Length: 199
Image (cartoon, rainbow, N blue to C red):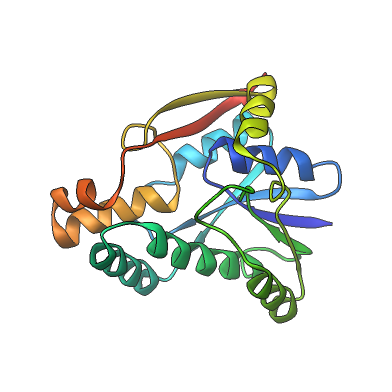
């Protein structure tokens, strides 16, 4: 069975891949608006032994998300909008010959992104795939412990860690549309992780 797992190069999506690996042929898939190079995700995928693909996301979704974040003054709704679009793009299977499941690394205590039950059911019905969230019942503490035991991770401020996720591209588009100060106003300081290998 083949699973396309949305991949940011962080510890959550990498742990999700490791959990699914005994049951699925997992391909790590990074969505891109073509704003930044997806090489950090490709490098992380190779470092943990998984195939990697990229899928093109609709730039209109990115611009709508950036406008929403700027209007809201925080990133939550914009990131959620992009994640839902990315789940659908991976689920449509245009990037592969066969797909049985689409997955992500969302965890129990994530505020965003999340996939609620109606969206999961809609994706399954429309694209004839299973939606999987192997970390949906797992909290941050357990994830940190699993990552410490199994992954080699670099961490730091989100603006400094090389990743290939929505936030990197949305930050760049927000700065382009509204100026560098808008990025600091909209995105709170937080730490990101990037997986660089297995322990």
